[in-house]
Length: 485
Ligand code: NAD
Image (cartoon, rainbow, N blue to C red; front, side, top):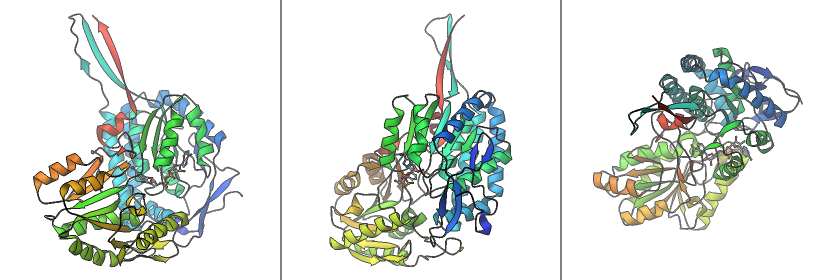
């Protein structure tokens, strides 16, 4: 089936082809993109395969020499792209709300956050430099030079269709790397819109290419096989991340992996409970709990657990579920039926093992799931081990700081954690003992989501960082040049 024009007015000018070598191309194969709100089809999008992947690699390789040659020109182009994205914020937010179900206000906030990353790296592009290295010999001098690693293949998830791209494209393009992006099959339209704005900004052919596919493994294999692709950057699940890490080994590509999480929230007896409730509402229910840093497990001191649970459940039950395009909606649908089925299974498992639902505890119809707070969650419950990716807060009590830290660290993941306490020395002791890459103290976040901060996980949550100088270093390699004078 060939492309049909998208059915909704919001999607009228959104491209549905593959963006290769600076041009839009309609491919004979297409796949359907639906809206999680009611499951109806939004558009059919060109379904790229290995042949198009190979063409994109050739275009990126051809673009590299020129693209890497002038960092000031790159900075100006990226700044222009950012301005165009900003001017298209409302339109892009509606596209995003339609294709992945996030409330439109949150979509706008995501685009604003993504723009901060892109603009941070505009500045970083202008500051790429080297160092003078000392020598023990009077007649020798040394210099370093930071150079782009080369062609980058980027793979992104559906839960943040704009900002996950911004965190990769911003530093990669700033560093001088051409990037080929494969967005998630659930949310390709935002990515295709970003590609169109890159074209409008005057981005040279082959510098940023975006190809959607319904066959991610098959489509991706040329990037792993081709030694000219020097960098893989991936955000998604730990299972897929592991596979891509292994695939990148034979050609020794540089690899960044932002993977799954299972964030613990520790609420101590001295915490400001009103603040803990308010901040945890953000940490837990933003994007209906479909974030890698979502608060997955709440460990609350036994002396305050009943009070916290009651207040948190009251706040959760007031959240407004509805159409993501309505300005007042706070909880949208889950992205797909598998996501909904997983959340339902996790909640049923917890209830069967003895937990009590203080709020929600059931489907809200279609792909919606009611904001849920569960008390008395038993050890071994799936919710306490696996990434649920839904609006569900399991609460467990603890009696000592040591127990809280032990429970929190009992996970293969190490992405984000949250700590609520008014005791400064406890905050230091606990944050230093937690095996997590990003920690919010009295802060529900989005923790770590600032362009100047390092964002990335420990253990099975990933390799490498996004944000700050760490984020652009992932796309640079350092050359040493020694001189005898
Ligand atoms: P996913 O791993 O299923 O898919 C992510 C991307 O990988 C998609 O684009 C998909 O098409 C692609 N993909 C899947 N199999 C592939 C293969 N064999 N080869 C190449 N590409 C392949 O994850 P998801 O369900 O889209 O996203 C949710 C996951 O992402 C969660 O685990 C979440 O925690 C994680 N995530 C992590 C961060 C972070 O910064 N650490 C941010 C957002 C999401």
